[in-house]
Length: 361
Image (cartoon, helix red, strand yellow):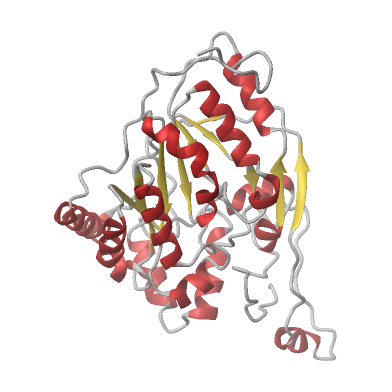
């Protein structure tokens, strides 16, 4: 049994939940001196963020899921300091022998040679440009990007090659790179999607503690739109009895800020995300926890999660159908005619042999 500590400001969880590949299982044990009760009432030490620099062998990841609108992805970081409790990427830390809980948001792996590996991949003789996304698993503008600028270096390579790409983020940090992004947008080479889960500051502060505040994300949509960047909103994840009632309000606010596309997915709870999220519910909304999980299971065939292609993003059953109808009706009313922007893949040209070599044209 895991010790349940009080929430820590700025962290989605402090639970170092064991991952599914753990060779050892640990169980809390009371030694007769009341240590379990004492530990449960003592505030834990604030976990500090550690950045682990990694030199990767490759940076492009292929996608075989028909549920996702891109063929290739780049994630400059593994783990994400935003600490979103519902993040479906948390279980990927298991492959590093790290906890999908607190380690995911405090042990950040930075792929410091990402731009170099990307240049090599795009320069290969047989490379054919495909739909490419940045930040599909972890946010490419999480706090450490301010210092390391790995995402910026990737955009520089893509810009040099005129390779179209899309980006998902919850961070206002993307505004720093408008000098690179705006000219590419004029060529039809980039689109940005800003995720807004809630407009309620308190809910955002506990559910996604180090992401930008909701109003700041709306400001980012406005800033991008004014700069001529195609920008969409992703109202995700939709969680019954928690943020679902805000669906129409979020779409209206995003449309008012300048968003031209809209999409959404329902809550996904793969692997260790399920116990982490259920503990979070008991800590923050215990009076609704059972109702939320019951409705989630109704949309997931009686389980916490349904990983099947074709249903994992939208769910199944009457409640999932009603959510889709609500989204479609609100989108049509507000003038959202698309979920994703079309980008131009025909302008691609292989990168120069030398990094940073100027083009003659």
